[in-house]
Length: 151
Image (cartoon, rainbow, N blue to C red; front, side, top):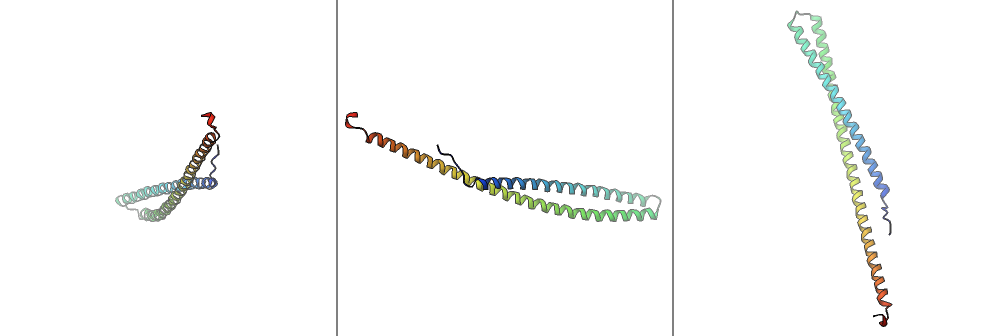
């Protein structure tokens, strides 16, 4: 029996490798986004703590130096939060780009798998047709070589 050989198997394997790379890239971008989000959450917690400290300083005995120092700390923390929000947005955009590339890689692999399946179906149909032809030839030969005495 003939063996099925898909002539674009190397392309299919390449598409599978590319898909795997894109999946890994997507996972890495997801981890980066999670890390940036965690940093943002910690910065927001720190900012809230500084604001609470500032409120407490204003309600207790007024110490202008501590209040000014707290205000500077709050301003710095707000700037850090702004910077971190930008990093989070960048990470989200990177994640979305990675998701798009991954989806395209999956789609390309599926297209090549469908092409392979159709090529295999054609191969099976050709093998069946060849088998039918061979059986017909054999049958014709057997009946064609019979002499009237054999009947």
